[in-house]
Length: 337
Image (cartoon, rainbow, N blue to C red; front, top):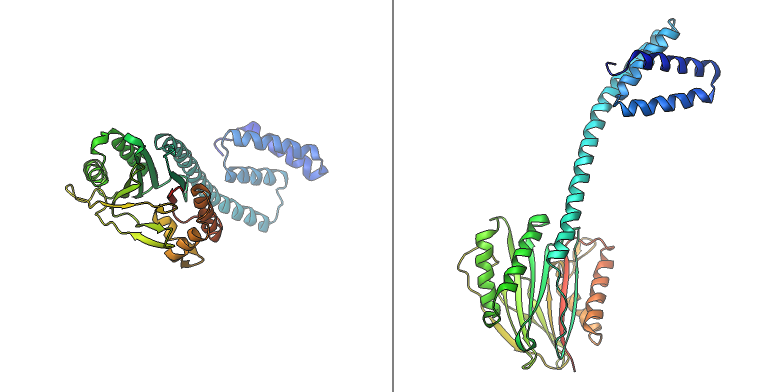
């Protein structure tokens, strides 16, 4: 009881005696005030129990042996409790610090990676991107080029948290720095691959699809770096086709090359881009089938693109009780009539 001065001992003993003799609530109020002083002076629980034992022995020297044993038992229990509680408080403070840092990083991520959905003649765009946790490991970005050309990047970072957010901000500003005359999807991926390979930790990789839409020709060009395959919806035939574009994920090999594909959008056709958080949703312990996602899109294909992606998200979020297990990003480009 090194932290307890003689005045504390005398005051506690006085209050205890008054309460035992009278059960006067004023004594309890005095004990409450003393407790606040104990907290302020960082008095440990076991020190208070030791103080109580000393006061009882002085007030009632004829206490039974059993009482002494019981109080000693309580004292030992509180010593271990105090140590465990102190460790818990330290862990809690660390968790609060980490949570605060993540919150700041999430705000920074939102600011750095913010992108506006552009207006493109003859094209209806819908986008939804929802993180499973505070930080989003998915990323999408729109670029508007010459002649109303639309550039679209969609990516998934293998490796989450603050480093992923910083990595994606580097990718965004790299894309924005490319001159428009070299903005071909395969060339962009090759350039980004070199940036990632040189600047990102070896345990972090990025999958990405990059596409360009030329409204004057209704032409879509695209290339992929190990990203989840997209889908093309042929409205006239009412069928989906996988946009099969293979390529190595960014950051593995410095000189990776990527194949480029192209197709033409007819009226009410759709190009669908997504991350694996969409196709790997779970219904209980069961992973959904990709066809289930396409069925929902087909069922609501008449809706505007934004309403369509929102419905798809709500359907699969509800299936998971709105507790996403992975980041969910879905983008639909729909050719207007």
